[in-house]
Amino acid sequence: MTVEFGKERLEGGVRERLFTVGQVPGVLWTSADADGSRPLVLLGHGGGQHKKGPAVLARARAYVSSCGFAAAAIDAPGFGDRPRTERDQQFVTEVRARIAAGQPALEMIAGYNAEVAERAVPDWQATLTALQALPEIASGPAGYFGLSLGTGIGVPLVAAEPRISAAVLGLAGGGALAATAARISVPVEFLLQWDDELVPREAALSLFDAFGSAEKSMHANPGRHAAVPGYELDSSVRFFARHLG
Amino acid sequence: MTVEFGKERLEGGVRERLFTVGQVPGVLWTSADADGSRPLVLLGHGGGQHKKGPAVLARARAYVSSCGFAAAAIDAPGFGDRPRTERDQQFVTEVRARIAAGQPALEMIAGYNAEVAERAVPDWQATLTALQALPEIASGPAGYFGLSLGTGIGVPLVAAEPRISAAVLGLAGGGALAATAARISVPVEFLLQWDDELVPREAALSLFDAFGSAEKSMHANPGRHAAVPGYELDSSVRFFARHLG
Image 1 (cartoon, each protein chain N blue to C red):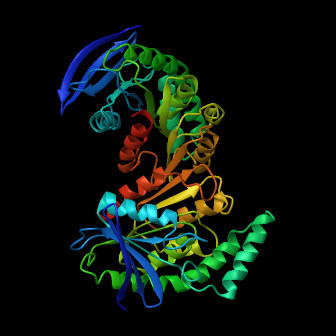
Image 2 (image 1 turned 90 degrees about the vertical axis):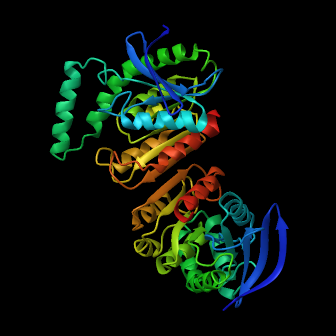
Image 3 (image 1 turned 90 degrees about the horizontal axis):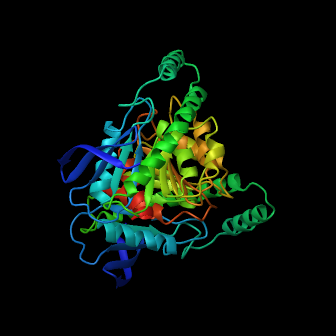
């Protein structure tokens, strides 16, 4: 499959192009004058988010502006511009009820994320192949960033995909993630929120422990699930620059 | 007490001056052309080390060269150029025997470090007063870096000393450290070695948990006690630049 480009805009020296690869809608960010092979960071969004959510946009701009990399995001199945199934709606209703009732939600979330990942991993692999066929990306190295749902997809993706050579992951645990993480050997920066209301501390620590990577660095910060501090974006810029640059 | 300067040398644009404040021997690093108020990072060495150990030197040069800060180290009581007591010798013999026998050593280390800290905290406070009387440091903000023994001293120092406004600590736990850490409210970057043979993981996690700081960030990396990766020096440069710069 090849990339079909749609609407395009330019802002602050960053070129943003909507695209599709087969049925999968995505966005590609490059510097306005990108020309020749460069590293590509794949950006997985979190649950309830999409390919142009504010956290994804901020990262895309940082990786393009600070590192001269390309960045790309796609909508996960059931999110953004992709159709929601009855199962997707049912999950949202059930997980909200559990959270509202103060019941543990991690295993329900991990189970649903694993279902999404089964479809999202081949989507990412086709997208990576199609993007690396573009002259402005070509044979450059690839990294992956994704937290929460983005890690539920990212762990099986990075385990399966030898073209991805560094990953920033976190805010996840439970299910079969640890077993899959053990098969990952590339450098990982792992984010943990110390007061995460969705992911119990022990589950996140166990997932970090499980990565097979010789270089893995866990950054734990106070606050709830969505309160990752801004300086972690800056840290990930240096992590990717070190491993992809 | 005032600073009495001794031997001086210049290397790669960094001016290094030996000094004493009362009975306490130290080293001050500044840029060759330092002039006017600037931030000062106090560098506490680890156990078995001293004010000019390789880890201290590398940090001093980085903080001076990358940030334009001043950096200073002193020998802790019983280390470097300071006299060893019978108690110091006894501790070294006993802790080596425990480690060799594969017995837990943390509480013995934490107890000894607390004794050293009782003398080292006033040493640091007098040193800070004397260094801030120099025109090339003056009223600039102060930070503290120290791991292991440097944290055994640093936790009570930072808790007691309102002039210190950011600290990099870690590789420690046990004893009364957590109770003292709860009184610290300045930003802390905390290093944990995931396979630390001297500090059990749970003891280090408990110490991180105890800090009263609204901004605290734990960086956990694989490897044993002394194997902190080089990129953590780079991370501490940015931490101090953010809080003292």
